[in-house]
Amino acid sequence: SKAQIGVYGLGTMGSALALNMAEHGFQVAVTNREVDWIAPFMQEAGDLAKNLHPFDTLEEFIQGLATPRVILFMIPSTKPMDMMIEAVTPLLEPGDTIIDGGNANFHDTRRRSALMAKQDLHFVGMGVSGGESGARHGPSMMVGGTKHSWTQLKPILQEIAAKYQGDPCVDHLGPDGAGHFVKTAHNGIEYADMQAIAEIYALLRDVTGWDAPQIGALFEGWNDGPLHSYLIGISGKVLQATDPETGKPVVDLIVDQAGQKGTGRWTVIEALKLGQSASAIEGAVGARAWSAEKETRKVAQGLLTAGTIPVDLPDADDLQAALLAARILGHAQGFRVLQAASDEYDWSLNLPRIAEIWRAGCIIRSSLLDDLADALRSDPPQGELILAPAIRASLDTTIAPLRRVVASAVTNGIPVPALTGALAWYDSIRTARGSTNLIQAQRDFFGEHGFIRIDKDGVQHGPWNS
Ligand code: 6PG
Image 1 (cartoon, rainbow, N blue to C red):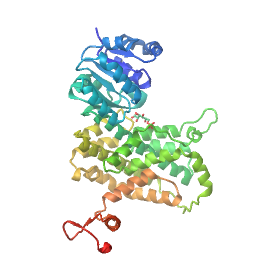
Image 2: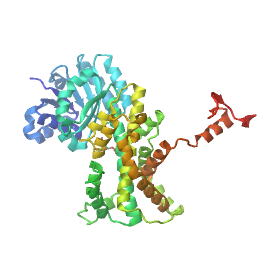
Image 3: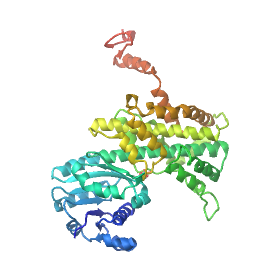
Image 4: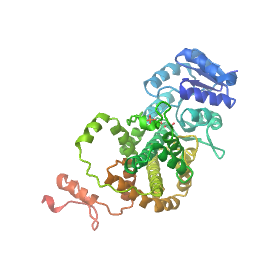
């Protein structure tokens, strides 16, 4: 009998997903570009090998699948995916679906969907979150593509997904690039969350002088409260890990230069293109970018005046509340970007459902997401998450602490771009009369761009040019 699904690409994520499917009783065809990876994978599969069907060539692999075919590709979403589409398309039949489960740029996904649709083939861009253990035991999956392909995929993906109180953390979110865009925004929020945690760590380390295990223990405690989340949990753990060779905290031995593969940056780029500003996420992307310039920072430290005004850091309760406020605002910015993209690309994204499928399995899973899902369902004023009553109530008690923490960071000279970006956005949104009246006057002065007056209809010009 033929396999129900194929998995091409037996790297970390592909192997884990194939084993997850096999464990749930699905018959899975597997293959890999480097054929010599296949035997060790089958070996590692142990008992699950009975549900795994290895093939050495693409042709045999495709022939080993029941039709209409469903094939998951876990290969780089860049050039290799385009080459794969070229190679596999002649082997497929109308109605077959191929899935890109990588972190693809959604513009590529839209292009590939359109290309495949011309041949009655279905291309699914699917975001998969949760790292290796998520993929193996239950990831969160954000699925784009046609209704037909979702009908094919749904029974398998609902089985292998993470469950939040029984609800599978997977759904069909919209056509073409919707799934990959939602994954991109997920990663943007992930970046902001990670950065906000790192900023609180920096304050405790550099202002208060706490050591890594102390900070880790504090974070571990916070994980039992309103900050309960995968990221605060792992931050608590890694800060308390000791290097066996030196006996020092491992984090103290790690070079402060962060990598990034692009998804966080894409969130910011797309936000700007959509006329949005995801300032907390931008702060996080920028922090990673500057972190890479280690040599410049070393030189600059000796050359640039600090001009700091040392003050004590607010207490731990304030830090905890400030982090919660920043997390709420970072998430709210992510959801705003999603809404803007949904409007632009006609995706009809279901934002509460997106929050729900992020409650388990993915990297940003947290108790906050359950609250955000409820708030998004409650039809908040202006469609604005931060105006939902329950979210406003959380901000009521956490904004003042965020101000105190940002103020002490500023006076102490500790960069906190994610916290600052979050707070600046909050203050922008709650300011009914801002200062862009002056921007409008400047624009009119040098370019006769015109402005609207508060007391007259129609476009006006200033007296300055006459
Ligand atoms: C996830 C993660 C994952 C991502 C890594 C690395 O949801 O499981 O987002 O998909 O690849 O977090 O991203 P960076 O290298 O850009 O930090």
